[in-house]
Image 1 (cartoon, rainbow, N blue to C red):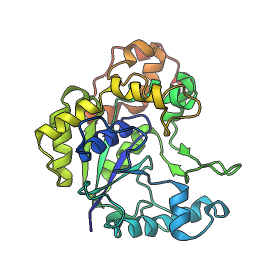
Image 2: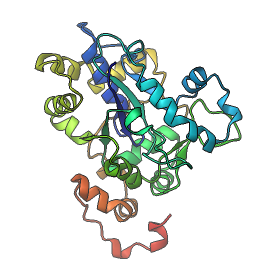
Image 3: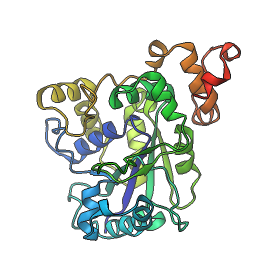
Image 4: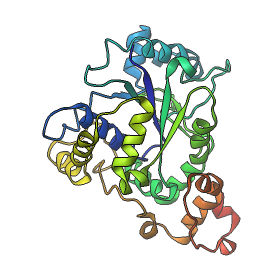
Length: 303
């Protein structure tokens, strides 16, 4: 049985880029892997079709809390039966998730605890950079995106008026999401900063792979990094589209910058993010801006 590892991140923090890096590592070919065929890593843990297919139940008929009661056993079931599902070229099973590490109404970890995964690669990104990418992907203004990231009750696919292709995911606010994974004690955590993937990709990727017990070698890592370069991903998306792109965004692979927030956000927007998330930002090693908070009304900070 191959071990399962979560690839956890708040949306627009680099999860898809990391999955493409892994897919290129697992593919021995000389050309970059097709971004629409990164099946060497699983899609998202909240995919409704997979839940329905394995449980032989129509999840659209269930309340969200009921689904959360079923998810621990569902994730454990998949983790314990990886041998037939994971390609031979991939030594472990990777599963993307945007779920925070939360408990259901029975007090059980929704992600299945130790049975659901052997560990988690937690991918984080400066929240000031997340804002621009989040707003673009979900068709929101920057201020709306900041409000979403500051909302401790935020969830994806929780609207019961329709049936989204994903199950409900409770994300909390940005800080709450990161803390939920960092502070849980069920499974080991390895932290990956998006900025470190940019600045020192070889070391950052090799260290993450060592955490899961995979040593593909420096040459394979260098090849994967080149194959997942942003201009290559943009070229492929322009030519073939990208199946995981948002319906409101013109493109998924937009800029991939680290530090672009300095030209994107005004002083009030920066203050709203920093005043809500500074303890976690500091914990992750991010630096504060020189914004003067005193002049900003509290009601703007709390929006």
